[in-house]
Length: 353
Ligand SMILES: Cc1cc2nc3c(=O)[nH]c(=O)nc-3n(C[C@H](O)[C@H](O)[C@H](O)COP(=O)(O)O)c2cc1C
Image (cartoon, rainbow, N blue to C red; front, top):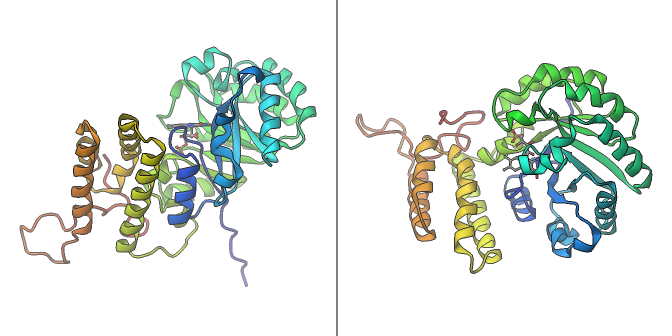
């Protein structure tokens, strides 16, 4: 008998402003499919400026449904060590170091992807920090700040330290989040890194994942960010799980959505503008669940207050529930308004926006 292939290990990516503990718990409850998550970064700061609220999202009682690894953004060894120890006090045995944040103000301070072009600073950091850690460290990084070659100057340094894993988003900081991931560079890095290497970037459907898995068989695990917001059943699809019926998937999405919205409203009580912006942010991704994502985005983003948003959402919900019978009369319009994308046939994709 041929042994069944081991299901791939899937990690929910950190998306600051989106994948906080509320999202992680609701996602695990409604859709499942992820094995663990890396949390959005917490910025290291001098101990005298540290505030407990920075760790609120990482409290163990808020993170029972999915194993989570906290992430630290910082470059000053003493500040990172201080935060690492606070996280260890909460029970975390593994922490991720962010070497990928591409935003100018972050890089200007020599943090995130700002460090990728300075291997000597990375080496000094690891030399100081690694011997002090009671637990493990993993790194999430890009190929470089300006050039994809920068990662190859870093590889021998990373290889000298006992890192738990290296997660690579194969773009440079200059590319931000657009343009094709550089798979050739990722492949070369896989061959020269002695640590488990995790792939991250543009896993948008099960077919794209299969192509990556075939091309990059040495990859230890796979991290998915925006793809899971665009199709919450993507992790389950990749794992080849039996999906619920399209109707049940629609219901799961709306139930997840309503809970996300209601719980966010509780958290942001008295700040309607922030709630509006948060939900609009989510809908830039959720729109891809519909057959005409650009039109959904336009309708959502036009709303200037929560009442307008609610009106658009209830019409989307009505449209999504109104599946016309097969073989509708000629001239009866589209066979289904809403959810002909990822929530319908397994493996199908919504039309491009
Ligand atoms: C809105 C947003 C917030 C992000 N926040 C973080 C973060 O806190 N830490 C981090 O390492 N990467 C962060 N990233 C990068 C993602 O983790 C991931 O590397 C990137 O989106 C590519 O993966 P994807 O194509 O699967 O989304 C963020 C990306 C976006 C779009």
